[in-house]
Amino acid sequence: MDSKLLDILACPICKSSLVYDKAAQELICKADRLAFPVRDDIPVMLEDEARVLTSEEIEQLK
Image (cartoon, rainbow, N blue to C red; front, side):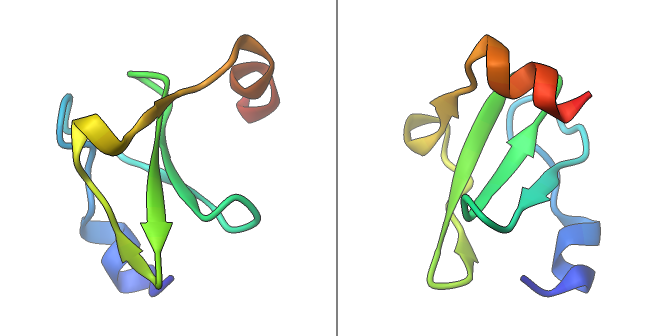
């Protein structure tokens, strides 16, 4: 994913910054504990498409 795009993207729910997980192809919002998918290098920033992170995934982000 383009680093310039990542710099301007924010969580659509709380507007906080996102972390890119290249292996999982997801943009992660730590505040809301959500992961938004990235499909074909296009972030899908819809609340309905996001998945809730597990407690283990949250711990790994710290």
